[in-house]
Picture 1: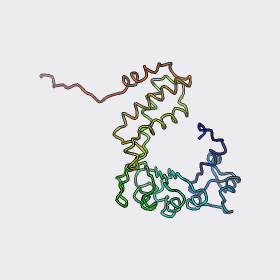
Picture 2: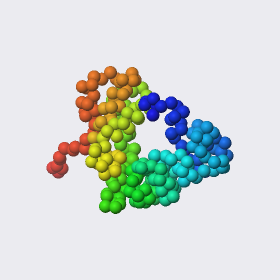
Picture 3: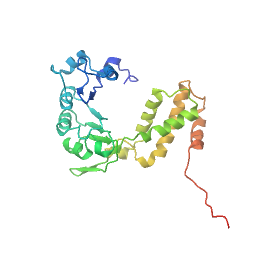
Picture 4: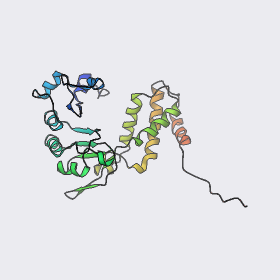
Length: 249
């Protein structure tokens, strides 16, 4: 959002966070110090129209904020309730719901429930692998939001670039590159991530972009564009083994 010119205030108002005690907002009792920068200000509370209360649960927050994206990292199974998802679907044509907690037993809601509660309109990605979901004759492929799509490529790009630091821009570049790797076919099936089976292809593309970002930011080696692909290919490990036979005894 900042790269697209949004102000800090706009960015802050676009992210609303909850913990086990509900909405984070200034004036709430017992907010851990590390969470205080993310608490909604009175101005934003008024802008969203929250009534005075000591606590606001997820469904209430969804009712007033009308979010388009819901991300769960709670580690609490079932914390995305049916009423919360249905409330979100009332305000959003295509809700984007990411129950990212894993293992499967801790996921905030199963993809099947989310798709059903949203009348088949939600786009879902999960932290653990899930089978496709069928709804009203349509099959929804569930993408896996797995950090293995990012870390190998970033790590390889950082090492080859000789970067002095790993920057936020490198991770943003990696995320944008990952998005570019999602095929139109996957998107048409509702999958927001590539197949895990193409991880090598994704990692290669990310490493190349990270090297360019490090170079362009002045913190990495001065590669020419036509050198980068070859450098990545030469450094990638391939599980190829020579055939052998036991030595004669």
